[in-house]
Amino acid sequence: MHDRQRGSRSKLTDFGDTPAKEFRKQLHELADWIADFREHIERFHVAPNDKPGAIREKLPKCAPEEGEPFEKILTDVDHIIVPGMVHWSHPMFLGYFGWTSTASGILGEILTAPLNVNAMTWRTCPAATELETVVIDWLRQWVGLSPQFEGVIFDTASVGIMHALAVAREEAGPGTRKLGLTDRNLPRFRIYTSDQAHSSAEKAAIALGLGEENVIRIPSDDHFRMNVKSLSQRIAEDRQNGLQPMAVIATVGTTSTASVDPVRDVGHVCREAKVWLHIDAAYGGGFAMLPEYEWMREDWELADSIVINPHKTVFVPLDFSVLYVRDLARLQRVFSLVPEYLRGDTVEAEKNYMDYGIQLGRRFRALKAWVIWRSLGRAGVVARLREQIRLANLLVEWIKKDDRFEISAEPGMGVICFRFVGDAAPSPRPGMRARGRAGSIDRIDAINSDIVERINASGAAYLTQTKLRGRTVMRIGLGNVLTTEEHLQKGWEIIRETAEAAYR
Ligand SMILES: Cc1ncc(COP(=O)(O)O)c(C=O)c1O
Image (cartoon, rainbow, N blue to C red; front, side, top):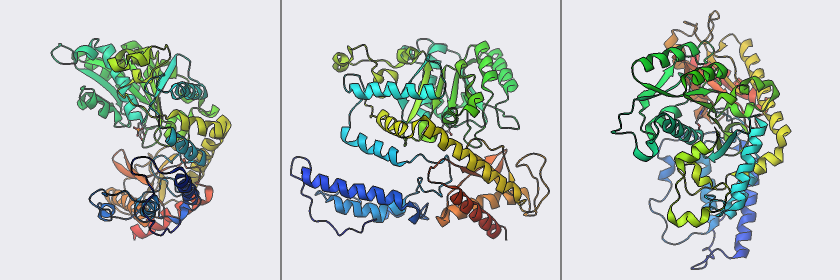
């Protein structure tokens, strides 16, 4: 990173923009900054080891009265912001789901900045609107979804699921859009999802006035997949008790283990019970592009809505999530509302994406997807996803060779959950070893947590911990194109050394 001198006062004119010549100079400097950052990202600690408030302490409490030169701002980025970051793009970042920064993705983001349009209606930016339709359809084709499904781009899967459930709510309780839920003698609506599903289900229930306690967590089986028999039973019981089953959320790629619910069986239960089926393929959706994962998407046609997060697995930089709905007009019926001042903007028959959600102003997200997907092509995306799977399998082999560790769940796509147990006999069920030489089961939990905390605090690598059946496990999520076999090998060494130190 360049070490800049404090720049002189900016040449900002009093009323307008930065003069063109100066802007060009700043852009060149920024281009170098970005290229240096990306090329030398391994120089940084993956994560800072700061206490909360450490960054704020280095920053002025009040905004500046007078404008400051860009050079000075960039110097502060170097000295304060960058060292205070968790570097999700660092090749040793192995936490959550591996990250989607790529050079082409960065170019797509940069290109979006100067355009700065509002894609609320077709007329307010025809290219943004039409490109949104195009990239949504490209992804639909890539994952083999039927053309009955059309979509809309949101920032995140959490927002997508909330919109999907708003439609489910309207179909279960017609008139809710107009009249709301209260004083209408409506039954209590229920949503079902597995005990492994993401908390965005409850968040959506909170936002929609359905109540988080009406999200019923169905137990999962030994492979962390929803138990369909329990689902049917619970739906029947609820009906008997006068409650109204409204929606089921099946997950394709759960957050902890990337397990995949039995979508076909869940789908048939939904059809029979006449409830909405939402598929949360936020993580697994991208992998559905691979012919070897075709089984995962065979029954998606049973769904009413599906969320895929290309910002998790299709290399689009955060944020970019697609909600597909079978017959998109169902979404439009719930959310279309044209204020008078926009009426003239909506006369064209083209889609106006403001009609498909709560947001009016919408950024041009489709552009960055278009840039990265053209740059990689389908084959490039597939090759990179396969490399993640290869690396995940390799790590599993290494873990299996060291009997102080055990695999805690069947590895799924780029996700591996494992646990340090010390020297002990293999457990009958993954992750369930009662005692290891390391001591009681609680002590083993504490050691696993400690290993993750120590590694993350060291800045050498970054991983996550999660609980499976109440036990603490370490979790690695691959996905960063910069993470090579060598990085993974180094990460595994760090884990083993840290485990030894934590165990002593
Ligand atoms: C399976 C699953 N669904 C939904 C989400 C929420 O995603 P978002 O951050 O896009 O709202 C996550 C987040 O990791 C997830 O793992």
